[in-house]
Image (cartoon, rainbow, N blue to C red; front, top):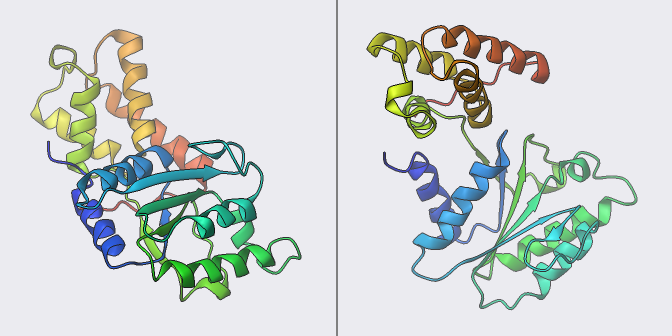
Length: 232
């Protein structure tokens, strides 16, 4: 199967080459987003470095700036301009949601200042989160990218990746119904429900379509809303 995220990969690559300074990727799953970003470092003619930060672990390469968004932004400002680097800050929506507080206002200002600086470099700042929160101060600076849930082709790929052919006890129509039932679920939920079926009876068959639909009900209960499926 071709890369299921090829179109998105090309889209973000174009933005990086066009020197978009600030991207905001919204998706329910962190891991596939970061897999795509890792792939971006491999397709560029100019080598790209990927650095990821979150408030608990700090920067992934050296563990610095734990608990400090300002510290993380400061590292970016001090990075030599001739380096080609993708900086990723995970889950700072809690700051973006409340931009006017005494603690958060300097962060917003620092991001604005940094955005101006990055326009003249080969560096890009990417914010990732499960939810979209943009303060008015950054609306003209941020480019939003929605990371889609798996489409039919990717669901088919996930099924064959997890289940060996002799344990996939479905005819053509049954498999089609299973794939359709999986639409709207995250990759993690699809893997979880199929793994449960294998653990329960050593195979996946038509009875598991109902299991998938029940998982979808659980997703609706937990999120309060059913996510719109992105079909490519």
